[in-house]
Image 1 (cartoon, one colour):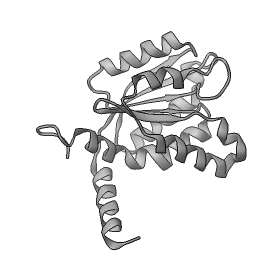
Image 2: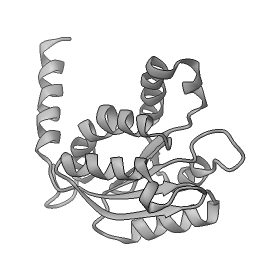
Image 3: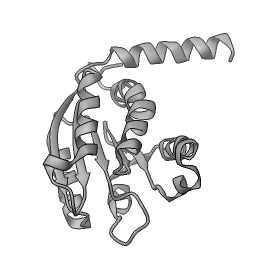
Image 4: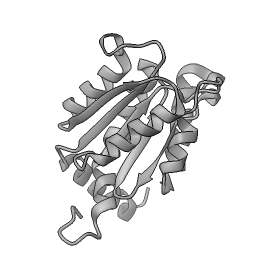
Length: 182
């Protein structure tokens, strides 16, 4: 890596790590889980808090496109939500519809998120990783990521992709605002 690129990367990483208190919405999509046994939703929230951020809202929603759409709209109506994370419903079964719903909201898809997620998943679970339709992108000045519902997938996506970059993402989305973060 050349020195300029390495320095720029380190500067972005340092700035990203300095951003604290980002407001997250967490939506678990499942026909079978309850808030008491939603291990993946609980794990996401724990990781958010450990990274110095906050969960502004949490909801558990059945795998139903209309209910998913309503939950996303409700989260986006909350001005404190800067990042929205869903977990579950990213597979290929008939009931897995979050990608179709989320795609309607995204203004800019972060294709690299899904690509990197599947690549990292492949290292852990092999070719079954291709069945994941994890997706991420932006909605105005907010970021949104849809992760599979397993705790291992959530841990991988949060630890290796979302949390290391979320501060930088929020800075980029707000840097051209008068008085913005960047």
